[in-house]
Amino acid sequence: MRERMQKPISQTNPRSPITESYRTIRTNIQFASVVDETSVILVTSTAPGEGKTSTASNLAVVSAAAGKKVLLIDADMRKPQVHQRFQVSNLFGLSTVLIRERAIESCIVQTETENLFLLTSGPIPPNPAEMLSSKAMAELIESLRKVYDFIVLDTPPTLSVSDTLNLTRVVDGVLFVVDSQRTNRNLVRRAIQSLQQVDARVLGVVLNRAKRKKNESYYYYYSSDTSVSV
Image (tube, rainbow, N blue to C red; front, side, top):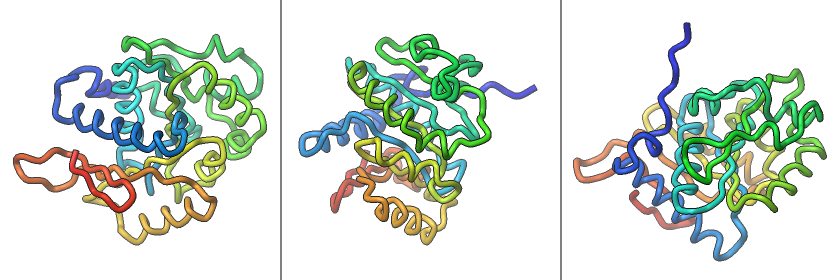
């Protein structure tokens, strides 16, 4: 029997230093919104296991806690994890909405965090790349913009499949997650270049599991040429 994933730390321990790190990331994204609209972002990484789902989930929680109406979408239709993080059903979700089997309203789940809603991936389809690049997906995101203040998409790793690159055209920016202890620097460079080739707006990088001094936190956020310890 599969062990249940722990809920996002920002939900279970809102006073944790790590939760505060996610609040700083949220604030930096808000600063980016001053120049260009940043109400829909996707979170990705180079490879699996770097913490992209944790980052997407916790960012959604702290944004909702700040009073915004937030929707977290699991757009990883190959290895979805958002429903496991929040311990909800994945019987219906994004895939069932896109094939018009269920209405969007019946698939969105309200969480125990006020203002935070989930759209899980739904059953894994045979053609995730085609579904995510479809006109139906673009229209869905545009319609959801009118309902939610902030939308976060958890997407597959950039170098693994084309799904994430296809989605960059319907979002306002990309948050890139890197595991500092296991990710090859050249692969990170390749992944960023792939995003730039499709004109994705890379908002910054979350450096996960960074070696730190005792008075430093676990995460760093980089925006443009400025690095900010969070």
